[in-house]
Length: 340
Image: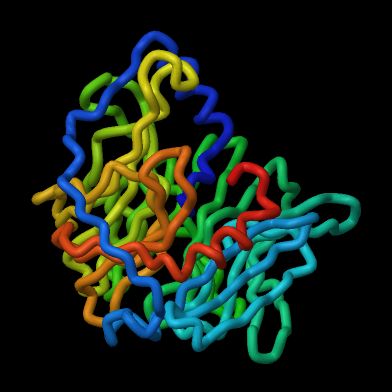
C-alpha cells in the first residue's frame, strides 16, 4: 500500500485536465517471478525477524497506529483521539509525529505534533498563526538521528510547497530556501546530507506533467531530478547505506484509466540516477529493510483484484517471499477501510 500519495488537489486537477487525450503504457517487462511462502515468523531470516514496522489508519475521525516486529514478538496499538495526516514513527520507535488541525480564536490552523509513546503525552512543536486556507502543513518525517523533523509547508497565496524543519523539542523552527515550486513528502538520506521529495516534472514518454522525485541538498536546494516516468511515486526510501533508492511508480492510464490500463511499477536505482532496475510490476508500499540492508520489506499486491500481502525481496530482485502468516493481520487491519 502506498504511503505517500497525498499530492496537492490543485495539481491533481491540472494533471487530469492535461492527460485526457493521451495514455501511456509501461515500457518495462514484468520480471520473471518465483514467489515462495513463509508461513511461520520463525522461518524468517535472523536479520529480519526483529525489524519494526508500523501501520496507520483513520477510523471514525481517530487515527489508529499499530507497531509490530515481523516476528510479532513486539506489538503495540495506539489510538490518537484526533484526525491526523502524515503519521511517522521515529527511528528509535519511541515517538510519533503527525499533522493535525486545531481551532484557535475561531480559526482552524494546521500544526505539527509529537506523541511520546512511553509517556503517552502529546505536544505541539511547530506551526504558524495562519488559517489553514493560508498555510497548510503535511508529510513530516524524522532526521536519521531522530532529533529533527522535516515537513512540507504550502503557502497558498504564493502557490509554493516549500520545506521547513524543527527540533523535536519545538526549538529552531526553520524555513528552508527551496528553489522548486513543489517539495512534497520530504525524507532524509541515512547520513542526513540529502533530501528526497516529490516534485513537479514531465513524463518523458508522453510529455505530460506529473509528479516525479527530486534530490535536494540538506538546505533544500535541488541537486537533480531522479525520475521522469509515470504520474506519481507513492512510496520512496533511501536504502540503509544511502547509495540507492527504492520507489513505486504509477500510471493512472489517461482519462481515469479509460485510455490505457493503470499500471504500477517498483524500482531500485542508484542515488545518482543510474542503474534503474525494475523489481516488480506491483502496487507496493515499502515498510522497511533488513538490518544488513540487503532485503526490502514491503506491502504489496500484484493487481487491484489481489489482497494486500507482506513480502520481502532482495535488493537485486531475487528471493521474493510472501509472509503468509501476516495475511490474517492485514485482512483484519483493512476490514474497516472501505477502499481496501
